[in-house]
Image (tube, rainbow, N blue to C red; front, side, top):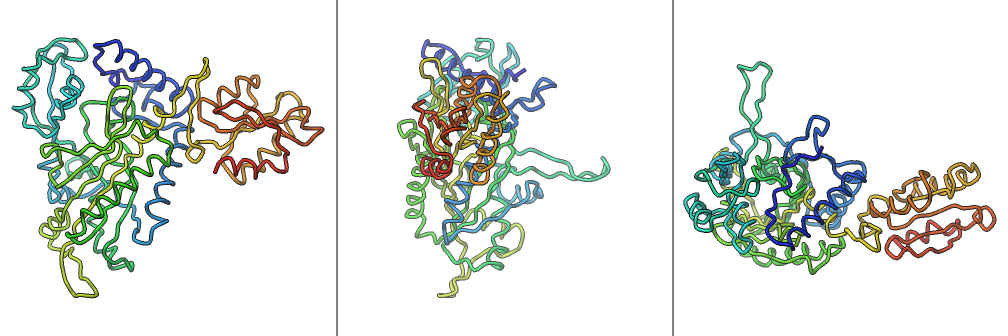
Length: 471
């Protein structure tokens, strides 16, 4: 059973009901075809936590690898690290997260459901952006607008109060000797802690970036929808270190690159927009923050973000640790603390967006119009009939050849029509069928996912044909 907590959207108009039907369809497809599963599902599921299935893992890894190539391997000014997910509590005290990494929660007195106050308000009043407002102001907005509970439809609320999003862990062998630590609430701090190590072990010179990908954890009160907002999630980001005078130029450059990369993945441009954070929304460390937002069926939600973190982090860690994290310019001998521009890409969230953006229905056929570069499988190979050894042997030979060059699927279940539909639903761009005619003319039928058109292609030309199509 899927955890019911993700179904939180307030249904007040016919349009929203239609949108929720679309949400249900995408979530159903995601489970049916092995993209995403509810975590601990056999025990009733766990709110805000999801597992990626076989096909979802391939999709997520494709996105991860494309990002790493685009923003790290293809650049001369970027290096990568892989820092620990568990950090000493002093790190989060110095960074300001213990004191400042807070959100406001509110409880419904009638049904005891709990919500993030800002999300509750923004779902009821989509034109308002209230993240970062005081608890008093949030209470006033809830009361003035008579906002109702999405679960029981009553308007009887507790006062809002702050909670910290850091996830605590206890380290140690014996219960009485365990020490408090935190799972990282962002992956940036591992980069700042290793700033001096990177300088000492590489040839990097300002301006340069340190990138990483990995898990982060936040104690989310409001879940979903689906894998948009979760307790455990994957991030891809880099901290780009520079002189203060250069931050605006670099900020604008990365904004352009982030937008372009979203389009390279095949996300529809008319579903995207930039939104600047108002002062009360910005994180405590940021002087300027902007999001690329995606237009889900349930409204505009953040996709990628970019922040100007100034020299906040390196200065604080220098002060609190006693270790000098300044930079010495080798040409001018000037010593200073670099400023930072931080582009952030939510990987788990990106998988969610890709599923919604690529979902299509066409005369009863459902398919994912995935860009071939991110599709889990680039092609699927079938024997026309699974009970004919000569057809199976011919198809198997093609499958083994293609498997050396690309990720391909083998499918001999059911009839050929059902196999096509199954591959359509996971976004496989091409299906290759070995039939009786193939035994005679050494050709196979290649079917295009988007157009459903079929073409006969010589077996010895098939790898080149598919590679050209995939480009």
